[in-house]
Image 1: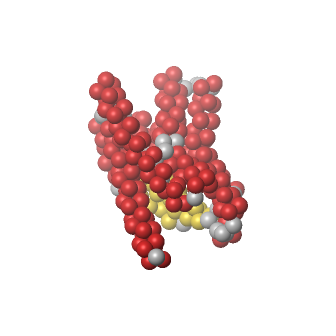
Image 2: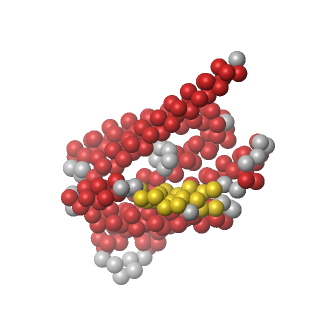
Image 3: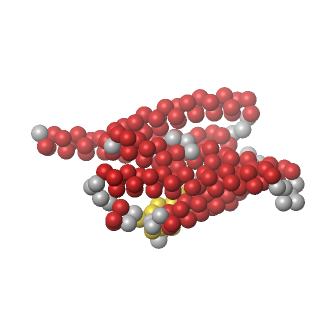
Length: 219
């Protein structure tokens, strides 16, 4: 198993510290561990092997090594693999929802602001990770659903469209939010999402060129 640290995490920590939101950032990173634990547990239960852990500015990201028996040309087995990946992707946000619900109904002798901060951090992690942007959980889930329905080629095209529409819409909403709430931390998150989308756009362009080249070669 490999562990990779994204050095941008230190930049994000500094920016949140300068904006006096370091406690929120610390909570997000702590509960991101529980989030990823949900992925790990569900992945291991489904027979996947943990391969890599990435420590990123907005949490952690894990990848599994898919057992060889899951790679099968039969459509039914391919759909089963996609379903397993959907379950793994969903398990992280579900953990955050469960934690939020627990703290909604129990205060555990915490101060009210501490309890609300924990609830807020977990709901924020859940919503953030369910955004339809790859490689966030929402992007992974949408990609597998589209793959089951339309196949690999069209799933890539559709997720590409959804990602770019989503980041544009989020940028507009965030700009308005930053103006009224004067919360610069939102800007950091949007920049991070733009980095993800730009990287995915580059991959999409490369895959599209390869696909077109293969078609030309066959003709």
